[in-house]
Image 1: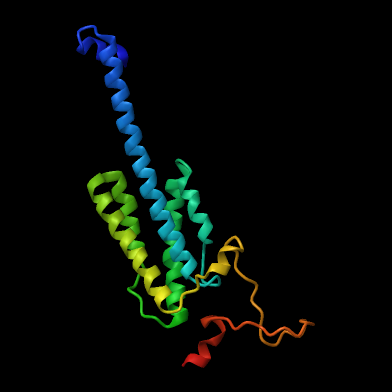
Image 2: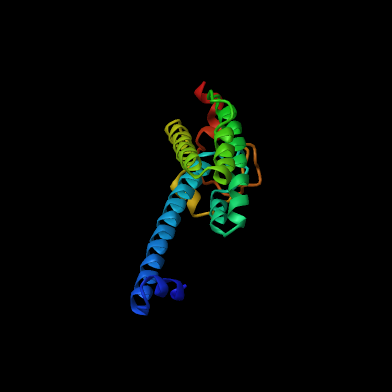
Length: 188
């Protein structure tokens, strides 16, 4: 590579090396920006999964970070888009909220397919999909979403559900009331 630049610079290897270093720095900055955007996107996806009750999640919120693995991450993103769509459908049905139909599945698939075909179209659909996912998170959390600070301490594992009739509890501590999971009949 240096020889090619040296030929263009009329034999000045120092100028060629400086140009090569400049190009490498430019690409390194682009890669760091892309990774930063990917991390923010995955944070949004994780937040959306956390807003879904564990019984409706088809993927745990922490699993979205597998998308950062090179090559495997591309396949995992496809799986993540499909599982989020199905999880959102189940959550909306459970809560009795009217959804928009496919919960971003079509837009997510268009994003993945267009990334092979046309970069600008992929960028536009990526942004649209991200906005849609953020909207779902906001809507679920504003309607009494599942995400709370206690859930993060348990490594995003679903909590074991207990019925009110469990008699194997020997202590007399009062039980905490669950959010909408067990109180759906009381709200209506």
